[in-house]
Length: 295
Image (cartoon, rainbow, N blue to C red):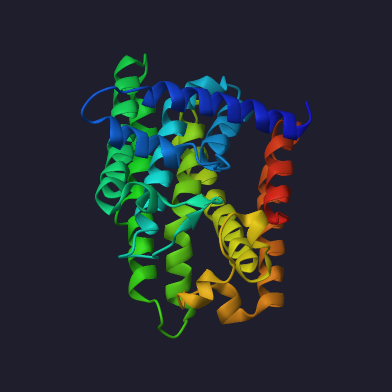
């Protein structure tokens, strides 16, 4: 199957599952569910859940094994974007070509929608783990996601990013931000996918490690697109990193050195995937596409 068709198949699986998990709510709380769905279905690439599904299949299990954890990852990622866009943080009004959540629903509901997505993610994972024949696999997947999304992962990276706006860029801080703010959830996606395929700890940790490499390459490419990309293709204004005085690879190393770094990291990922032979064709093609994307 062509990798784009496989991508579409995975995306349909994820979207159908997310729709089922959120559902329709005709109650006094309906507005917060509406706000949750607004951002959850605003056109995201679903990369993190797709990484989980792909790894699980690559290792010989059905993709549906990891669906609850994959959807939880997408909810956690989405909540982080909702909160990131708030006036107290990045103060962005456009996300994925649409008004951001707080612009549509107000700051209060946007905060609660983000909280709701985070909590729903854990409800889904716990409910599914309780039903597993081998709950330890679900617990390991869930712990990977919890570690990656907490103060020693994504939240830690976001905190460092926020506190260092406008400050002089330094390599140590920049590495910490990218490793945690972007890399952690991507690494967790690969690790969770491997655990749900019954991988042992050593193999799962290998997937986690290469996930951080992939996450760094993805973030540097994102930094480059913020400078060189077309706002109409990206669905958000270009140049926001510079306006917000964010720490980025291009700001520290320049554009050409940043491009070279993306190439080096991509080759490292591809070398890792080659060990799995033809089973890794989808992930290999997806990696190349992500590092050559325009949005």
